[in-house]
Image (cartoon, rainbow over all chains, first blue to last red; front, side, top):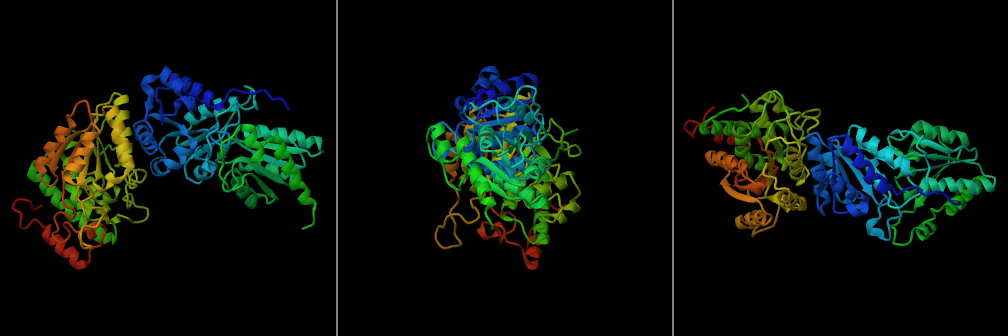
Length: 318
Length: 290
């Protein structure tokens, strides 16, 4: 299946914050010495006075951001997700989540595909961690256009936001007629046999998986959930109602991430079988993207195969 | 009139009254910390009654000087000073540590508008202060950001991350006071259990901050005239951030609490309270009774 690749989310992020800073004097960018990787080096070139190099010290970077927000700025903190989330978590918890200060946290290199870095630089529970902190909006945009709009929505929103930004180009999901809105999920494909739910660029692989399933006479509904928190409960219930069976697929640990969020909604609102596909409570490793997607069973083909397995099991008597 | 001019004897009398309120509040709440608040209180009194440009009736006044108590467990000292300064009624001190109170165990800016930042997880308030000072600079505002850290708190890595960044941005609008009371909660043993090592020797702490490029000064943190002078001088620092190493005594003012690590967070009994209030009555210090 040939898909048109969009621009990598990290470069879209960099370009968009430059534009936003042109429009809004409150916008600042803080970098943890990884700007040439995360794509915000372009911000230093465009707005040198508003690019704040915090060096290799994530705890302090997040704390400084809280201080800047208290004076009225909109600091956008950019770093690798693994470090801004887990290393600086206490700064986020106490100074940003508990205070509600208007800090935007952008975790780069999220998910499995982190450019040959290996497990130290891969974090599979940033969604699980951030969505359990009261007071933070959590976003996982799926492609170039959605990332562009999500960055704008993040800055426009009042209060703390965490946004995942992936490293590599991913297939186009949306045209510029699309309108991203915080808290709203999007049906990428209608279907009646099974509902597939995903976020971030994984949604493009899930959409492809649905095409494979269609060739096997399985009609899958694909729901893309770019806002993990506040989660679109109505959209998820409606999608579950349409098929009666849900599979969540994510580049995250199966514990506590989008799968957890969906299961929580459906267990209380519309109990149907929910199966979680993702990183099976293990750490990652370095490797080329295609090899990683194969090994961790997140490629379109691997997802289709697992979904078929789930449906086959459902037909067996309990 | 945004300044509240007071003489040194008036500041001393205010600090003495603040000590009484601290001990009473902790005894009433049956919890909290005593040693640290009593070592910090002279400095906090000097800041809020003499040094800082503030408007208690308008706590969100954008031009105000900022203060962050990074050693957030000494919250009661800050609450007492804020109450005495008129941010809220002194009677509210009775709600310290109670459910729904603005006076949470550790400072919560969402619960109390007088606070410039939340703190309590050690080291974070300092990092936030770096951001406040940097923000003031970027916004072209000329307020000063004061932040108090403990000497034990200087164990935290974020202190040195922030110290490094502050020097790189030449934040001469940032003043740090280290409340060097020479004890942390438990710390390292010296000889017998009751004897603990100071977190840092005097030279050690001075040298560390100096090595990070800061302007370093020392002061007796219980000599009000000296504290006021040291804060005024630090505020005038140019080209680099300033740190004042304030030499203090944990539990200062109550003889049986002074220098005893166990009073970090011990709750006074009725007898302790009476004895402490008697010592803090000012009866034996001419001219300090309020």
